[in-house]
Amino acid sequence: MKKFAKVVISGALLTVGVVSMPAVASSQELAGEQAASSVSGAGTNENPYVSACSFIQGHDCTVGFSARTLKSLQSEFVPAYQCPVDHRGLRNQRYSEEFATLPAGVQIDHTSKIDVSITNSLVDVNTYIGTQSDLLSSSVTNWASDNGTYRVVLHCTDDPSKMAGKPVRPYFPPT
Image (cartoon, rainbow, N blue to C red; front, top):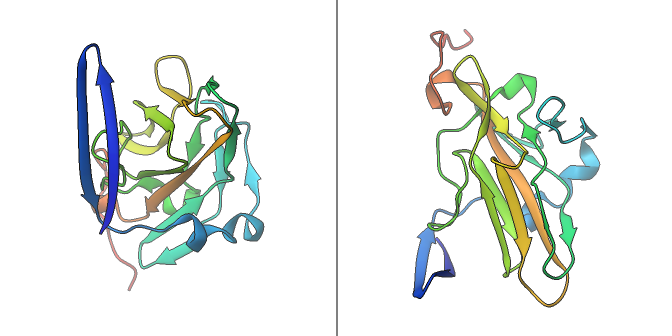
């Protein structure tokens, strides 16, 4: 289990918590995958970034994208990312810290003072297939006094019973 400390300031309320999460692929474990697969797309909702699976286990795969750097106190919309066609849906599992706002199947690797919020998913026939990027859907801010980085990792699956959202067709495993 990984432990994270998180401080949330809301008005005059200060909450400090330590949360435990299941171990997931780390930046070091995913470091070489960007070189192994190319990324297509423009990071928009109409043309999200897509890359091939870098780690496949059964019906599930992990897709890690390049880290993005933000200067001190810089904010941006998080670009749109999408699972590859052969593992179309985001896994219906939480990969985020307790206080983070992220869709199921989305993991963020980041430096300590980066806050990321992604509230909306790209949807294809009731299945969540990626993340949206716009004013109402995503943001990231670096609160540190120096540069910080963040990296989006998608956990995708080709098994509709494990997909976030509602699959519309039954799953028939290969024989």
